[in-house]
Length: 476
Image (cartoon, rainbow, N blue to C red; front, side, top):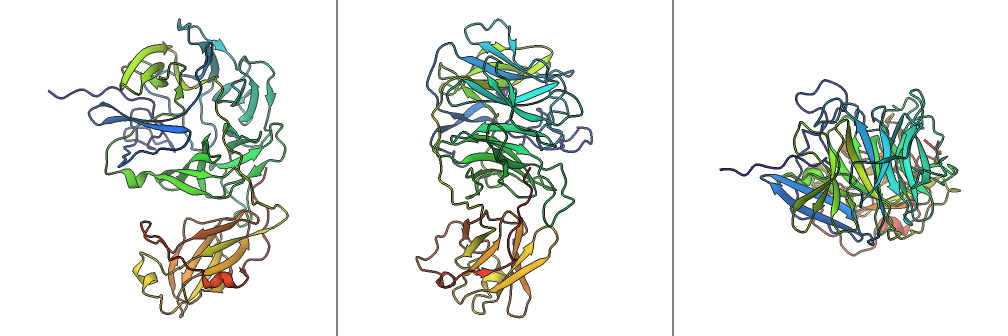
């Protein structure tokens, strides 16, 4: 007799438009979590990855931040109204942009020593409130909220008891998923304004922004055509975020420095697909007992409640909270946590360009590119949205190139042969921050190989300036 798998934990990551759902753009449900896999599990400083087998083919994948145990801590979470027990309504993530919660979503708190179902509402007066994130000293709370139907979601801050409420952002589009940065600023997800080369940019995408706690010095730090959603800040100071490409089912975890430099892939879920199922939830939170607070429903006839989960013994523990009229999601503890490192920045806002360096463009898994190494061609820089050619530069004999490009604009790189034929194009795009130098090893090179320890010929000369000066784009 086969062992029956436990019902799913609220997934960290779910597929869009699952079979059987109504045809609504970017619909998500809890009953169709995307199948993910892993050959090995991450071990990031300050975070612990836990792979927990819950039953046949069901594995819980949790990232949680190490925190010191404290007594009398509050558990703060979001209550999401439901009319269908056991599944979140189609408005929960109807878009991958900021927002998407149902009217009536609210923030509440409860003390762990009183699990009698009584909670205290912290967001009274708001039509929608969600996305709680606790400060490193455990005293303050960031969240996303709005008071009326027609206004956009904004980021607010208050003390964990609901007092000293103040707005942080005053944007013209939805802002959500805020996280504290260790230098006193915050990062959050929001829709960018139209940019150079893309004046009709859709407002149904989201990028990462940073700002001060009074909303000043707001700055856009990601420039892809994608849904970028801030998740948390790692102990090494990098921001962990989720990226969903437009017009694609491809999703991935990414990291980026708070100044927008150093963006790189953290986990590519496509590379995990052959090794088993993963489910997880954002955010799970570590309780003073060392157990995790997770969103869970014992059956599809019940709403998602909060339960203890023992990551050591792989056991679901006692119920902390359940309400037949609400899903309980996004639990966070009001405990002090280790403040991440403050990373230094190379960004110079007086500059309008950055630099792109490639060690060997012909180091490639694309046969046409690799076969052209004996006859170096040129690299072309294009505006990603319009396809406008901004300039081109020669590729050195060793395959390297070094160019100066407009900052804070989504660009494409294209390798052309000596006869002008296109060999390869970086379709996903790339950008540089002002004064940043971004480098790559090759053109779709084998990631398992390391480059030769040589000085590229291209850097022995000043970079070739392409596209003129950069233009600040997408700031709020």
